[in-house]
Length: 209
Ligand SMILES: Nc1ncnc2c1ncn2[C@@H]1O[C@H](COP(=O)(O)OS(=O)(=O)O)[C@@H](OP(=O)(O)O)[C@H]1O
Ligand SMILES: Nc1ncnc2c1ncn2[C@@H]1O[C@H](COP(=O)(O)OP(=O)(O)O)[C@@H](O)[C@H]1O
Image 1 (cartoon, rainbow, N blue to C red):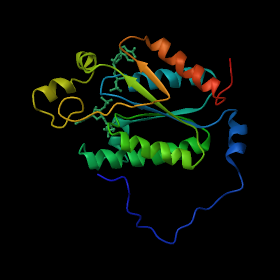
Image 2: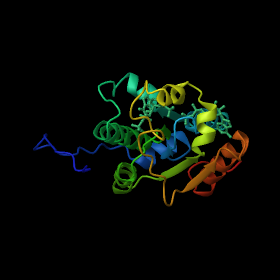
Image 3: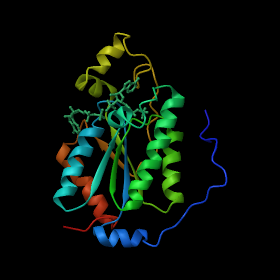
């Protein structure tokens, strides 16, 4: 598998406008950033993102969630779960996250994103664009995620009704050095939100309380 995407568009050039990223941050009162939540199905990615979105809204911070299931119903509806399709899913969502972060939004991207190499591609996209990026490892033992089974997908995977299900018969490569690690089997949702908000404040992305 390779992360090099063939560039079919030639003779195209980036076009800058007059309104800068700093101008946009001044309008919004905070900076843009991508928080990339990665973890097993049922680990808590969506639950944490929903709670963080609410906590940010209460502080007057504009955020937007990009969620695996939702994105796969729309822009990525032509992609399945092979390694190649997951790679393209993450590449596209990485690009979308980057654009949102550039607008000044706090982007909450929740994708299993099981391959380290694909996640590194997204990190690099942000670094190259000079945009803040935080990988959040939503860490939860498989046994716990499977016992939660919020959508009944593990049951189906165990029954052989879903093939290539992450954690069952498809790999998940855990992050080596994420900016944040949330052990959702040990922490409460409130603690998880608190850690994320505090980190955004420490990094100067949003204002302190
Ligand atoms: N084979 C297989 N493996 C994993 N997940 C599966 C699969 N088939 C369907 N689903 C559902 O798709 C959601 C994961 O989509 P993602 O876009 O996050 O996946 S990936 O990042 O491209 O690996 C995942 O959502 P979450 O449970 O919220 O993680 C599932 O609802
Ligand atoms: N500390 C916790 N943090 C996040 N979710 C938790 C926690 N404890 C239990 N849960 C539950 O685990 C499930 C996680 O599901 P979900 O957020 O859809 O996971 P994912 O998006 O990773 O597939 C939810 O039912 C949620 O209520």
